[in-house]
Amino acid sequence: MTGAAAGDTRRTATVVAAAERGATRIADRVVAKTAAQAAREALGPLPPDAAPPHATVLVRHDSARVHVHLELAYPTDIGARCKAVRCHVVERVSALTGMEVPEVTVQVERLHLIPVPGVAKGRTQ
Figure 1 (cartoon, rainbow, N blue to C red):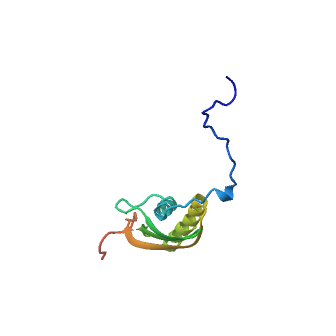
Figure 2: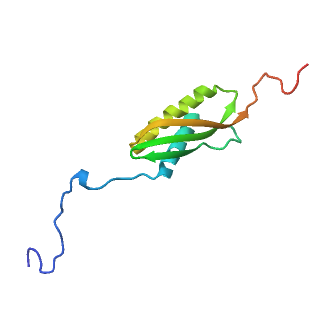
């Protein structure tokens, strides 16, 4: 017997236009984890007792406002490090989620003093 059998339930494939297939929604926590990972990438190695960066986000439509909390080694150029984090978070979150990132705020929670070679500890006379 050739052709379609009497009880054949196969259906022909229907092509649905991309605009009619639906939408992909990325959970806020996924965007927050992406932002935290981007902040880790921008900072490089952290001081031994520092907590890794974490982020919170507010997603509205296709826009994500990001708030990053981090700890830095000191002495360092805090402003330059925060700017590097902001730029990298905007770049990575935009690239990975397809969202616009109009605002990234960086909050430095703690500074970790790193001993500088050649500088005396404690009081000097």
